[in-house]
Each structure stands twice: as C-alpha cells, then as structure tokens.
Amino acid sequence: MTPTFFRPASAQKSVLIRLLYLVQEKTLVALASSCSTDLRGPSLSRAPSAEDNQPASIPYNARMQAIWEAFSQTGPVAKLVLAILAGFSLVSWTLMVLKVRQLRRAEKQNNAFLAEFRKAQRLGEVQQAASKTPYAPLAGMFRAGYLELEAQVRVLQRAGAPAGQIKSLAAVERALQRAIGVESAKLHRFLPFLATTASATPFIGLFGTVWGIMTAFRDIAAKGSTSIVTVAPGIAEALVNTAAGLAAAIPAVIAYNAFLGSLRRHRGVMEDFLLEFLNLTERTFT
Image 1 (cartoon, rainbow, N blue to C red):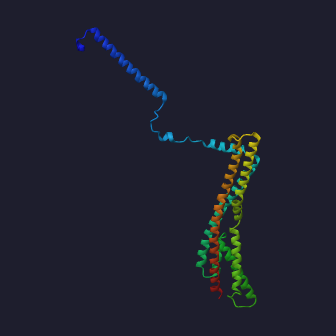
Image 2 (image 1 turned 60 degrees about the horizontal axis):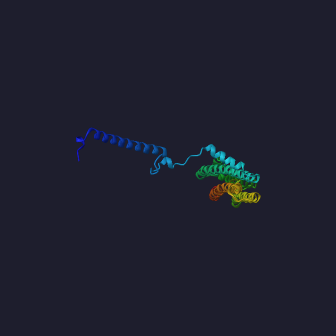
Image 3 (image 1 turned 45 degrees about the horizontal axis):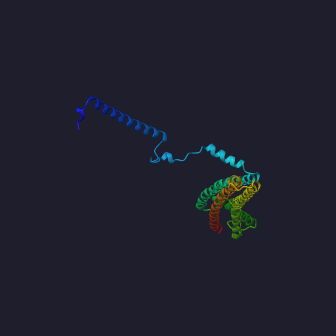
C-alpha cells in the first residue's frame, strides 16, 4: 500500500473531506445529546437534595381559612355541639389559670405566716403576721382559734377566774377543725366544674359523632351512592366533634388530678398547724 504522503493530491483531498464530515457528525451528535438533557431536566440518577425532600409549607392564613371553611360547612347540630365544647374548654382553661395562681399564692403566704408563727412565744405576737397574709389558709385558722381563745378568756374574767386560763382546749380544737373546713372549701372552689368538664365533654362530642354518622347515612340514602364525596361531610362532622370533645376533656382531667394532689398537701399542712396551735395554746395558758 502507498503511504498517504505519496498519494496523489486528489486522493489526499478526498480523505480530508471525509475527516471533516466525520468531525461535523460527531459535533452534531454531541450537541443534540446536550440539548435533550437540558430539555429533560436533571438526571434521574442524581441523588435528591435536602431541598427536594423538604415538604412545601402551607401559609398560616391558608390553614386558618381551611379550618374556618370546614367549620362553616358543618350542620347546625354540629355547630351547636362545637360551640358548647368551646364554651366548656374556655371556662375550664380560665379556671385552671386562676386556680394555679390561687394555690401558689396560698402556699407562698402559708410559708411566710408559718415562719412567723414558729418564731413567736405568745399568741399575741402572731396577730400582726396574720394580718400581713390575708390569703394564707393558716392565717384563717389562726384567727378562728384566737377568737375562740379570746371568747373563753372573757367568760372566765367575768366569772372572776384568775387570768391566763382557758375553759376548754377541746373547744379551741373544734374551732380549728371548722376553720380547716372553711379554708378547704375556699381552695376547692370551682374545682367541680373541671370534673364536670372532664366527664361530660367526651359524651357531648360523642353525641356530635353519632349525629355526623347519621348525616352520612342519610346522604347515602338520598343520593343512592356510597362514594367518598357523598359520605365525607358527615364523617368529617363526626371526627371534628370527637376531636373537640377530647380536646376539652383531656386538659381538664390532668388539671383536676394535679389540683387534687396540691389540695391534699394543703390539707396536711393545715392539720399539722392545728397541732402546733394547740401546743402553743397549752404553753401560753397553762
């Protein structure tokens, strides 16, 4: 075979033309491949990034609008049930906040009064501390016991008995027991409403649930279809009422049990104070 540089000029020209055609063809194929890749978008084999996996966030206004639309599409009975449950929930949350504040204030003032009481050597020294803590249950007990002591001392003075004596220590104890009942009633005030909310609201929500299911069956009978479009409104009412009943009952149950534990502790503190008061009374009048 003759080498390329010994071939005639016409043969060399044809070889160059074929090489140019080949280069042009390869270039066009590469361009077409890149264009198709751009049109298809990112490659399927590319690993998804964290931005791709991130769910689309729903604006707050859109969520509230969806909730309001769901409420507006419910029937009159469902709206009445939801309004009753909302009223129970609002009142119970208000009472929970007030009860927490009341119990914290009572505990704080009890500790302050008890510290002053234990430092005192005579009952008269505790009067000023009792006036500074008007919301302390122990201060109320002290006032009741002190009034009983003053009444007995006045009776004995009119009878001509020596000073520094009392007629009956048992009567003082009974006065303190009555004061424990009064102060416990103050601390238990409005607590039964939480028990009522905890026990009644699930059944009110259950009534709304049953009504929503009845609505769903009525729609099935009226339209003659069991598709999801037919039963969805009634089932939605049922589920919303169930959720509302539980949302009102669960916080009330938790708060009621927590408050009962706190009230038991307050009761124990008051019973201990009764014994301390009787001991100080014996040291003062005997």
